Length: 105
Image 1: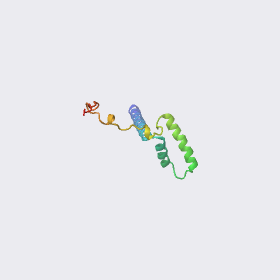
Image 2: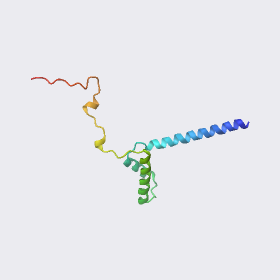
Image 3: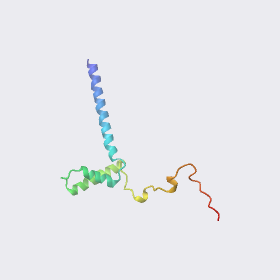
Image 4: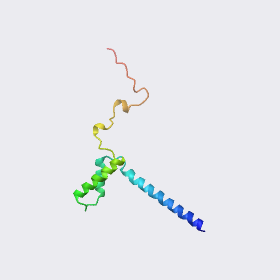
């Protein structure tokens, strides 16, 4: 009877650990890939309003620094860094890259 109980306890512990890991992974995925300004905005929403502004800023700075070190958030992107749609990237059909010969007048 104690073997059954030990197996049951081990199963419950394993299920609890799996649930905790899944919850942690989900929580991290909410922040992954955000820019620094997006992460600061989201963090500001999560901090209680009763925290003074100077402490809120210090807390945000520390949290953002840790997240940047872990690679969770990206540096702020500039619009010029974003990939733009050009004729070459938009039209990828077969033969779209071939240039037509100019008409002779």
